[in-house]
Length: 512
Image (cartoon, rainbow, N blue to C red):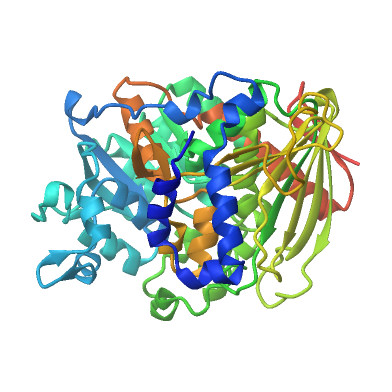
């Protein structure tokens, strides 16, 4: 965990100079050098933390037959997932190529491990997305090659895709309300499932999907890629070693302050291309209540409770899964929630200010979730213990409690961390404010086994490896069930304006 002073100074070459002047250049350098050179293990009285020394799982792609993947939902997230298999749209390849030379980003994609998969099916309710998915399926760039592949088959419905003998596994990146129906149909057809979060639109769906996955035995991975983020593994080990003492409270947040961040997508490029002739409205509605064709509902579906899962399913689900992997929280006993749709009243019924309390009396703690879509101040999740507190996102900062008995002999000033971990990456290379928040939240790359590597790639690889019999998914159906029940309890508490209890014996929510 030590870093020599010369190594740190060398690393400053990548940091924007004015950024350091803004915070007091000399003082900042001194603090950073001290932070990097501290022997935290000695301070914590431990031999070492094992998590930072984790090794990458060796390639397994050539140890089995080529897996044939079908994608349902080729929006922005669907395209990102195809990229993890090495498939890119020709426009993206062109954008990242200058005078025949690939950009660093494109070279990194080309250098990804070959998971030995083929995209054999594309299904989307929007023809523009469907055609783009087919074009992507023809271009795999792994190994520096860009040879055209056979185009994926177009399926008009997921019901047709799951029946295909040319599909082994299905990736689902659709609107929330259709997650469970598609995943259940896929599992019953014997197709392995990678499902983007949140898992389901309701508690009843969560129960049905869980039971279906367990009955069929297909390999299921929920798309919480932060399961691969080193900082949460470090946080978990700190907790398991008892270094936080008795944990009494967990704080989670969502802060956003843009229309896009509020899931209002009227200005999106593809919004201008959509109309009744190229959007299969009935297929989009799936099992939702009937409503006349509406572009707002289609492109900003996250804001409508008929299709989305509110700010809790859209964002809190991420933070819950992060702290759940650190603390094994599980499902709360009771939940209360207050808030409202105070600002963005032209789209749907999702609250843009929300406060939720999740009670875990058997664990002696509560978890809070505070959300506002009218302030962009980033806040880390925080775990409060009797001996220390833990701020955690893509980095970990452990602070000594002023009344700590365990660390009473550790002499540090109030601003100095008791323990600090951050991946050795250049966040300043991330340009936009949105990208920076995404990065800091742990969604981008992580540092493992001496390499900077994308967490979504690791998460997809883990699923593919498990299908081939190597290891198990880290966000399996049981973890997904805990997440889905928890945020849906919050949604029920908000809608009914009453406390909601979880009956774990009968697996149902009790309102009031």
